[in-house]
Length: 355
Image 1 (cartoon, rainbow, N blue to C red):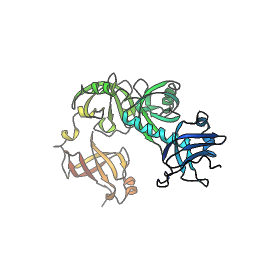
Image 2: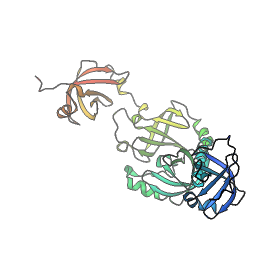
Image 3: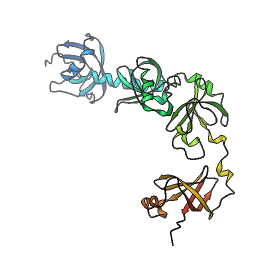
């Protein structure tokens, strides 16, 4: 390379670090190389692989244009600072993404693809993901029994459409952009939510059933989530066994936070622990049904919504516990702890075969 294009560098100024973004004016464009004035650091160059990967940018450059580039080598053998336009463009895009999240910028983006979890949208050449849970009610795939193929079929209908979204998250290391279609008009949503207070009883219909709970449409433009733990006082493992799309339900507002409403269906029912707080005490012998196994032992129900743990340690390990107890079967137990206020109970299995 010729050195005639090198501008005088201020030796008192350290060369910019690799990975940093730098700005300068284009002073020459040649076949296979571009030179940039980086005063006070000297001259930068884009050539070789970096030149080839940035041809779409370089073809629109003119001498005198100001460009932003990323430093890939502080000083090569010819004394130039090696630069990358493509990497700079990517870095600037991610910076813009971070600003968009902070400013809650609204975008109107094209849906490119769909998968069983949501839709893929295009933002300035970068691929973004919009989870199904972040779709507006009118776009949410309302499929009976949560059939995954049915969900995918519904989501594919959005391909080629444009959606109005805000960016929720950006992770340049993983190349991930996450969007939401729900929070594109925060002021309007804030006004709607302001009508509700903690403890309010609301009526609506089931707008979505997912593994972690159900969404209730309270009014146009407002949905609330009932977490699986708030569906019923009894154990719920599959919300789809209790609810289906369109079901009319009542619920209680239990939290309003960051523009979201959390609801409880079970809060409108009598707490079975309160109902039975005088029925049982420590030492009582009771009949109980095994309703679930977990890493600690077996969960046993003695009344609808009143269940306690039989710990593995009482059997000498999980395998021995499961040899003695079967799901769905009833056995005799003794209550070893009963604290209805905290909804806590532990039980000991009464082995009829023990001597």
